[in-house]
Image 1 (cartoon, helix red, strand yellow):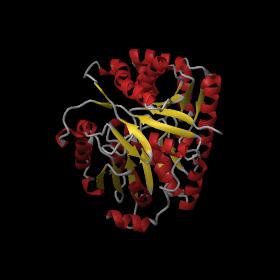
Image 2 (cartoon, one colour; image 1 turned 30 degrees about the vertical axis):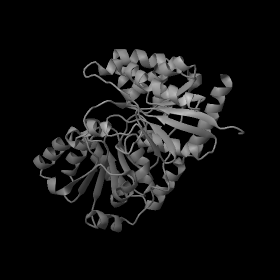
Image 3 (cartoon, one colour; image 1 turned 60 degrees about the vertical axis):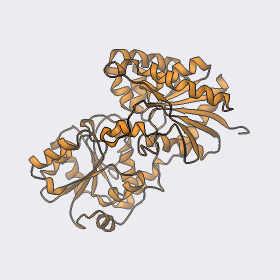
Image 4 (cartoon, one colour; image 1 turned 90 degrees about the vertical axis):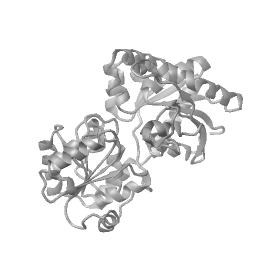
Length: 396
């Protein structure tokens, strides 16, 4: 390719120095894409406006502390602000998001970054806002569905209507799993411009460590069953089910990695079940530290009620650790072999325990698990992205 395609990645899901793990899966896909040498990109990742940076305000303070502009891994990232009022925010979010981002995007064009297309991530509100911006600027756009942007927001009347409009206006609709693509087609997306681009896994960052050494580093017993549950501390991730599962496994330990509003509830639950001494709440961890937690575990347990493409599953497998997960959305596409782990056929403790028992009875070697994860490199996804962007611009 003689000339690089210029893309503007647009999404509220993108990391910053203030929130380094927020939307890291979007950054990872971009970093892999840029390795192709075929694309040049800047990122516009809007952040809700908030006036106070004091730590007492938690996530809102981290948003306030986000810089207006920064360089991340050699990519220019812009964080314009937008006003998101409470209560009515869900329905007007795409409009205020677009209004907040447009001045920054127009400035980028004036300064010489006259991009070819918008590469948006997360259909609601980001994809709908991208449709507004693309229309005003006369640019094509594509959007990637990642999970709850389709599975959750389609249940609400106004978001449903606006998502349908964005699906019709886009040059291509991407899903990180075939289940999301099928749901977009149900919402009216043209099957001819809907495709699956699955997430890969960083096989360099996530590698097999010696399990005993990983446990020593984390202060865990070198012997015995250790489970790890990774994700935001909210109901949808199912950490409460894993704690209840632990109460049925007298010798096991559990490490929960993540932060969120359910922390005290989960701690209280562990106390009431008498397992508090066997549960470690490790808090949120930098992405590069996760391999130690995965490697220390006998299994990762993911008890989600919905998932687009759960990156933690492949990350654990890349570290040689098999998984137990609920059979939801794209997860059966990730856990498609006994080498990878087992799926619980229902989201309850009994079925999670059954799946774990089956896994432990035919436990795969770490090398087998790692070999399965290696089937999910980024190469195919990167190639398909480049081909898609080229075809979109040729059609234009």
